[in-house]
Length: 306
Image 1 (cartoon, rainbow, N blue to C red):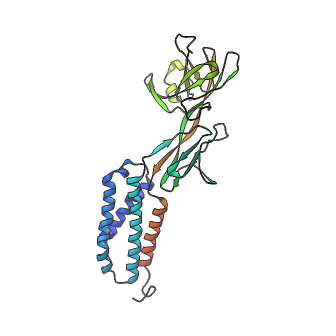
Image 2: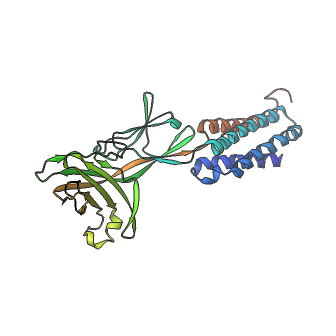
Image 3: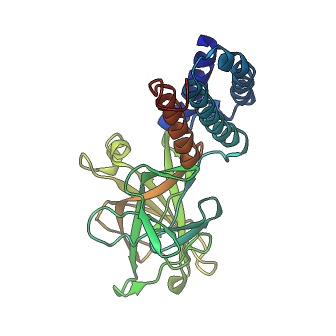
């Protein structure tokens, strides 16, 4: 009986740890899931001997219910390990709706100009679940991941507003750069992005120096705690010559080749999705285990004849 209890306990620990500490590559390893399956096989093989050793019907019924619960939990863990997708981070532009088939819904990314910290919501049908903290949704854990993005305002030499477009971005007309690519510059690995100014016939590349990095580059002149953005304005075909470069501090402005650019560095969330054993299946399994244990403890005479 002790071997059966130990085997069941190892299965419960092996699966529940995936819920407590999600996202480890270990859970997708083939040997890990084979081990879980092997433990279930050992438990099933030991059940007949365990049931024969029990004297009371309540004990046998409880053991069967608990073993069934362990099997349900193990199946949820193995299915997640073998079939669950790798963790991914979904980056959306402000105002964008991103369909996520695995979640059966849409991630609604709010506008960045709202008051307070922006919160992404998972919309399914008429319900909306705010992802303001770690959320367990079916076979996934959703975690908000704050990122630095750059909102840019542009104007020409007459101080007329210039429309910003992102031909290669997910939101064509968004003035918010998601900074999804990275490059090595001045010895630092920093994020960058690009946008277009159609009215001025200019392409602009922006490189973000976060506050800790900007503080280490004296030539930027950034006060402590202030980020900086380097802009490279590409000349159109008619003007020729070299591209023009300028730097603006967060909230400041710089004029480059007749174009005035004002960046604002914002914290905006992405959403990380991590596959886990389905929480409903695990909950059902745990209820069966608990119910089985309680049934096994029913006093003699309370469940059938002893």
